[in-house]
Length: 527
Ligand code: HEM
Image 1 (cartoon, helix red, strand yellow):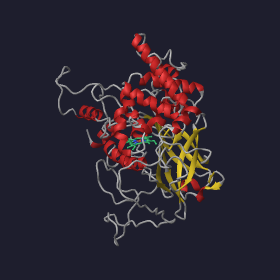
Image 2 (tube, rainbow, N blue to C red):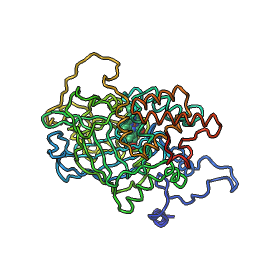
Image 3 (cartoon, protein in one colour):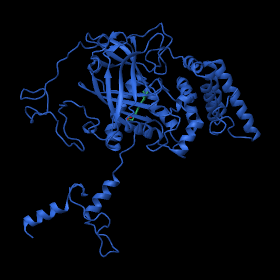
Image 4 (spheres, rainbow, N blue to C red):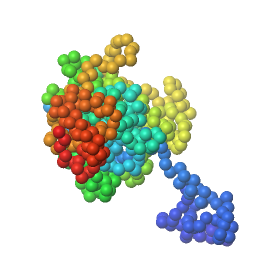
């Protein structure tokens, strides 16, 4: 066969539907491996087969150590240009907020926290609400949850907390005694426990839940002046949470319901929308408050620190591929742009190390080259190499030989500072101490009283169900926290646990009031 004839044969057999391997070779047989005779044995030079199976063997990257199960979508953020009645520039110079009507592309990932990538989406758990803004100044990530507070206020406790919430290292079974053992001995968690054990611990889906930055950040204006800020997302679809019975009914039918709800709504053209609000406080210790503004177990009261609308978010495109966009997406609290800053919130500072650290391990050193993570603007560093580096910096260098700075041979130069730098003064002894104003139960009581009756009933029934399985010491500590929070809360929890103990000693039921039993639990008022 001449060279020409050979070329013709190649173009004849390959068209746009033709399967190829990763080298671009057309695959003519995808059903049979090469063997000696049709009964084998197989031969080792079977390149197509070995390439196919070895890539399959490497399909997974480690799942996220927390928030492993998630769903993602693309969309945009539209700024109002104002924060309430004021121009937003009074508080921040971040470009993403300045101009009314300005749209910035975003990618969002919602998640559950404790269990693995394919765990049910009906579980009682916080929900992650992580937003990546591809701003003209580079990426900004707002990595939040649906609930406005958190279990702990110091980052050093996070690995212990997660170990207690995840399955037992021997049995691989999640155990509520481990959860309450940690919480009873970490009383700062009681406010979050109050939310999580209420219906707010099972949002109906991702579209009908709030989001919150949880930790305290700073906004910095053109003059370098800073204010403390908290972020809140409010769903235009309304808020909906589930009773245990409703959750169980959904789970028996579909354990992917939240992912499916989000995906289907976007495919139907019903684009979910949230409004972004901020709460602002002057940047000081606020001794007049009975909580510390840097304590993430506390809500900033809305009557003192009103919610100021600053923009809206619309999700209007599903990912083209789950793995490349959702699984490999990487969000972090350190990813801020000019005009946004860290506060001294100790959780925020601990988180900021953890995210990019885990992503270098989970996705790889060049995780920021992956399109979903890459800034949608010029990126120009002197970084080199690393596993799976596939492109040089995208912006052409004047002199590509010069991968260092400073240099007079032609290379990138430092940017000019636009606004005045924010340079907070910090003074004090280096210590290992908790913050002073650490009332652990007052706001939990306020939250209990704020719940509607059915939410209180669910909360008590859910707590009784799980705490009744714990040792007496853990039960007593949890009752003491509830009593400290609110008389009715404490009384109903104590009565419920006593009733549960009596019924257990009768042998009538191991867990009479708890929501393990979906038939009884949802409308059961205990006490
Ligand atoms: C994910 C650490 C507290 C929200 C993660 C991941 C780590 C982590 C290691 C996995 C990231 C990845 O593999 O890409 C920590 C530490 C915390 C902390 C050390 C406390 C010191 C919080 C808090 C919130 C939060 C308070 C809520 C505001 C999230 C969310 C994700 C996440 C939403 C999932 C991000 C995604 O969708 O990829 N966290 N976290 N975390 N965390 Fe935290």
